[in-house]
Amino acid sequence: AFELCGHAPEPTTMRAALSLLLVSTTVDAFSVSGLGVVRPARAATPAMQTIAPERESTIPDSLPSSWTVPDTFSLADLKRPSSSEPPMYRLTLFRSGDAVHMANALLDVIPLEKEKAVEVADTAARVGLSLVGVWEQGLCETYSEELRRGYNIACDVSKAE
Image (cartoon, rainbow, N blue to C red):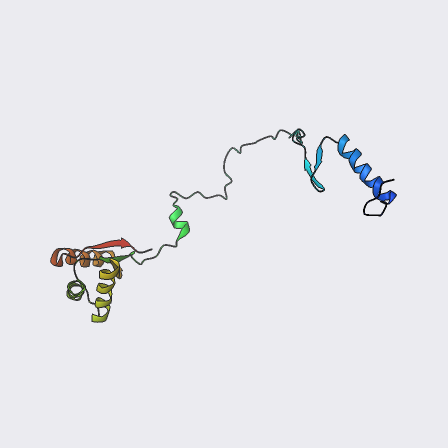
């Protein structure tokens, strides 16, 4: 009766196709569409109810005697161990004139080697800023103030992290 490409379908194949067709029309939680892709139907959404037992909460009258509470508390103390070394600051030089003027000012104010002063000044002249060095806060601020006042050089002191 029904032939496909000259071959009659086998009865088991026909039964499987009919079963799938019947199941897909009676089950409303899923819809069959496309080439064997099964998607959940939009109208069917799973729902679940849960019941949780009530929990008794007890608050202790006082802390156990083995607990010690410090007088002061700081998160910084937990992050870094305290050290006797003072914090370090960096001196940044900004473009302020030509490289020769900046290099001469650096050599007059800061004990640097000539090559280092020329390199810092050239970088500041090309890029716009350059790291001169890292020192303790007082020394770094002294160098910065002298460069600003004596040589009209723009620089910045910031904490080194």
